[in-house]
Length: 150
Image (tube, rainbow, N blue to C red):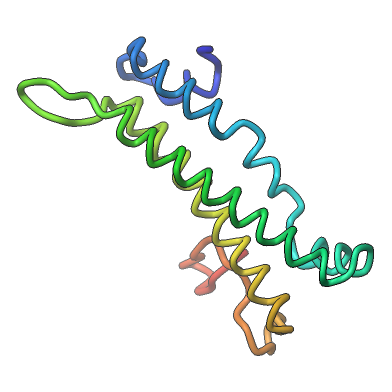
């Protein structure tokens, strides 16, 4: 169960406790395969799906992905509660658990944002080019370059 991904979160701090490792195992079981479901889901994929299966089959595919995102959210929400270390002194997260949750939530939010952007652009027939009618998806701020970047 303990792997290199988890070891990264333990860098220069205490290792995950057995209870934390159990909570992470439950989270991983609940989300098994979910992030991979969204690999390659972009506007080109949706256009391909429409050309292969038609719009009547594309809508259920998109709804199914939305449900999958909802399941991911529920698993992440459960992990947030499960990884809380409660003692008589305080309720907090270990450093490793906080790092794990931050990384997982950032991944979830980025996938959700990409999904919502793709669905919006496709369903409304918008143009995301630099001079288009809908902003392109951005992930980072480049202050030296004074720009938002994909």
